[in-house]
Every structure is written in C-alpha cells, then in structure tokens.
Length: 310
Image (cartoon, rainbow, N blue to C red; front, side):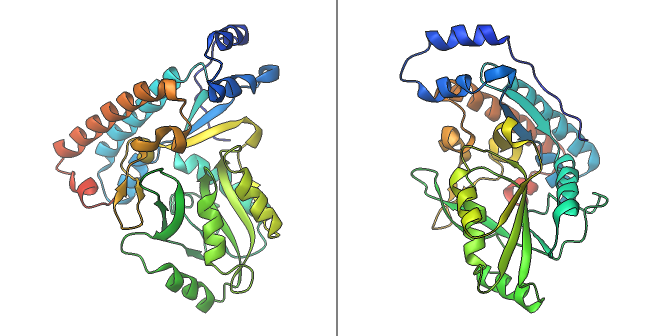
C-alpha cells in the first residue's frame, strides 16, 4: 500500500463554530464543511509529478531530487492553507501507478490503452503490458477555463490517425486508463472520438483518483454507454485532485487557436480552491515555481520548460 503523508485538521467542534461565522452566501465553503460528518474528512490529493516528468525527459537525478523537495514543500504548505477545508495527501505518480496496476490486474478483460504515460512507467513492476498510448491534451475556453474538447499533444498525430492506428493493431475492444479525473470531460471526449461503440468499443475505464462531485455527469454518461468504471483510491474520501505540474503552471491548458490557457486564471474552477484561499494559494504556487525555475537555470536546464518538454 502506498505511504500517505497527511496534514491533520483541527477538531471538528472548532470547524462547526467557524462555519457559523462565515458569510451566508459562501455556499461552497459551507458545503465542504458540512460534508465532514461522522469524523470523515475530505481529502485533496496532490500528485507530485513534476520531478518524475523531468527525470523521464532526461534531467539529472540530483536536480530532480531538488525539485521533488520543492513539490513536497508546496503540498505541505498548501495543506496548511486549506487546513480548515480538507486534508492534503501528497502522492507520487509511481504510487498511483502501483495502485492502478493492482486495479487493472484484478479487473482487466481486454487490451489496455493508456491516456497518460505517467501511470505505467517501465519502473512500475507488475503493471501489465500496455497495448497502446493515446497522446492527447485538453482544449479550454480561454474566457472561462471550461474544458470544451481534446486535441493531440504537441508533435503527436491527429486524434483520427491515433484511432486508426488502434484499429490497425486490432484493438476494437479496449479498456482505457488515466491517472485521474477532475470533471471527467476528457475521458468523455476520448470515448466519443474513438467512435464508441461502433468503431472502437470501450469496455472499462480506470482512474487512480477522481474528484467525485465534479465528475458525476461524466460517470453517469459512461454508465449509460455500458462502460464499467473503476476508481483505485477510496472515492468517498476524495474531495479534489491537483497535480503540481498544473498547480505550478508548467503544464496548462490550450485554447481553440493553440494559445496557452493558464490554470492560475481559473484556480477556483480547476482545483476547487474556495475564493477566500485563492490569493494565498497563488502566492505559494508562484513562489515554488520561481524556486523551480531557479534550480533549472542553475543547472542549465531551463530549456526543459522553454521548449515545452514538460
């Protein structure tokens, strides 16, 4: 089982008294507090994927170790900022990968296609063979931050060609796996682009983690299409999820015309950080990003960001 690092909350009685002092129109924060009944605290999963991504791209282990420590600091301090709302639980991608690998081994019946290379890296033993990878990224409305579609990753083949490659490999019935889902819109769009069920039929989907309230619509859509859903981590305890590459604005969204869309512009929508904590969280993210960039420049590795390798 993966080791969890948790930042404890204050006692429940203190939380209830603070709720009553808040403005009546702050429904979002009140709802988060009210859900913690029976001593069950909601969790914000923070996947620390920046250092592993850079290591996979060839950055030296020593620099990656320094960046990993900065990611840990980011998760710890974010937990302090949100201590009245949730517990912050840092995870490494390889920990999620092992958890997800166990779920697929227990349930898989068809070839597995991965939407995220971080999930099944070669160093994760027993993960099983991946039949293919889909190279996709999300398109967002630059005015609202809402996900409105998907596109191929930079340098990857168009999505239609990626689908044709799956067909040529004989992958007509598959299972999709991704590290996690926020609203689930990406998975929903992928299922449609694959031509489910007429071109490629998706039998099952796997997530390591899921933002349960945000993804209700997509999960209902998948069920209506006859697709089974597996979520590796205990769903009832997950409030939300964010990766450090997104929080630190190293991997953002892309607009319809290819322009960058920053996570920082839509922090409340993309990470569900209540508005009263937004300013403090942004200050933290900017500080940690600045420290990461200093480490990269110090080691002549700034090109990893400037050339879009992250």
